[in-house]
Length: 152
Image 1 (cartoon, rainbow, N blue to C red):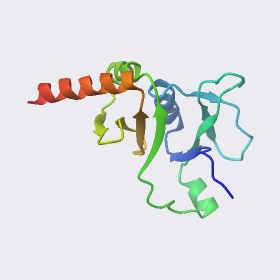
Image 2 (image 1 turned 45 degrees about the vertical axis):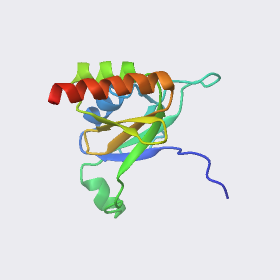
Image 3 (image 1 turned 120 degrees about the vertical axis):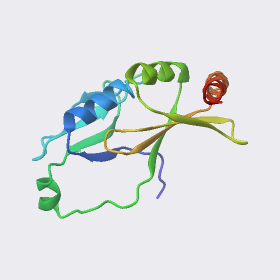
Image 4 (image 1 turned 135 degrees about the vertical axis):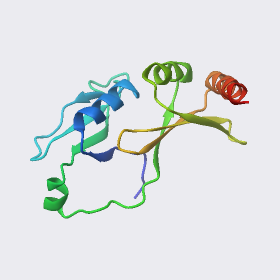
């Protein structure tokens, strides 16, 4: 048995519309087809890659008004810390986050040549975006220097 990649993750949210707006506005996902489950929700898709029709349903949002959890007897799902994505075009992300007023933090990963940006979704899930392209790393480093100078 070989695990190849993350298929999707699910978020329980008391405010489905708010969660959908976040994943659309901040990460650029879009809602798409979802099976007719007996509970409200939405599947958020990535932009289609070459040869794909709709992209991938990477985030499954589940409207949780309290009744769903009681009916399914699922309780807590444990100690999830964060979800990580490989990403590109960090400059466009910075512009989007600043325009939307989304708080973020970033750092360089020593020895790996990786720049990371961390944000939280409206339900408190940390999302890590990893940038490995040298141009993105240079933009990220400049952003870190600029933010450090503004604090100092």
